[in-house]
Amino acid sequence: MTLDVLLFAGFRDAADGQPVVTVELTDATATGESVYRALEARFPAFRSLRGVGRLALNLEYRPMDSALSPGDEVALLMPVAGG
Image (cartoon, rainbow, N blue to C red; front, side):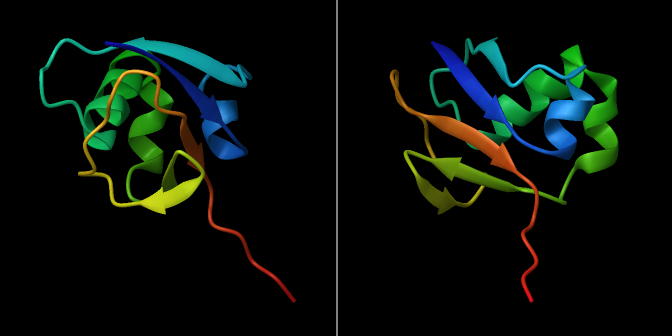
């Protein structure tokens, strides 16, 4: 399955400034973790961000072990602080 992954803040920086990266997943039970592993393989800087950000799947925050389907909107975001 091919997915476009939207990247924000530190994730975008780790992907050499690319706001969207296309990821090809071959496992039948692809999850957010599968996307993250694919990004780590392509952009080693992602390793230092593991566990820092959040996965958004179809505009909702979801756990990294959430199952993905073709056509899903996937985004990786850094934590947001307010004040």
